[in-house]
Length: 245
View 1 (cartoon, rainbow, N blue to C red):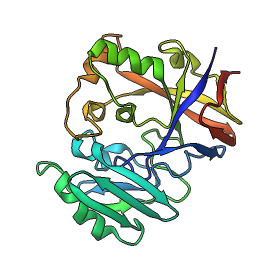
View 2: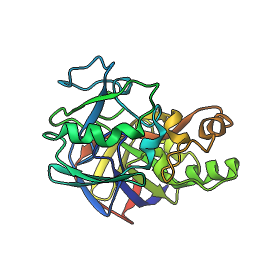
View 3: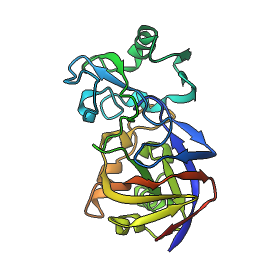
View 4: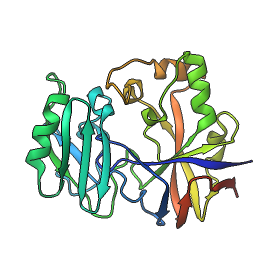
């Protein structure tokens, strides 16, 4: 069974913005280039930023839905963030943390731990998985959720990296333990992605407006997409073929 790449996305700062791409070159054992390079530790975090840490240590959409409405652009070591309620911010995360913390503060709930500092682990994107992963998502599965929910959803809600069209519903779950060629690259699929409240937030408005988790539960799970690791690097472009090896 084969499909084609329909969308490519990266998220330079974990939970703080999404950016569409037309091509990317992936590297064995690494996350998607430019994806989750930084994460925002909150004041109750139990990490010093020296190594990968679970998502509970970071400010994220699951707890602060307004963050869903941020878009981002990565240019070298600089990031531009945009949100309808905030002025555009162009800054260097490694050197200008305070200007970012001031910018994001109005988007954070007052009853949650406040964002405290930006962390970066060299050579390791801060994915939710405890291994360097790239997430693969199925457009057919997305459309099925839309249909059952009875409303149109942006695929940005799922914060996936590589989107594939032309596959059967939930086909991606059958890929566990198998290798998949996408463009010039080869991935080994390792885990299903169990979803959280982040997917209930609208990436245009920042409001929770869709019971995505309840809808997924009607299939007997709360999973959407799969985590994969790169085993052979190479370039991936929109419309490239996707096939199971």
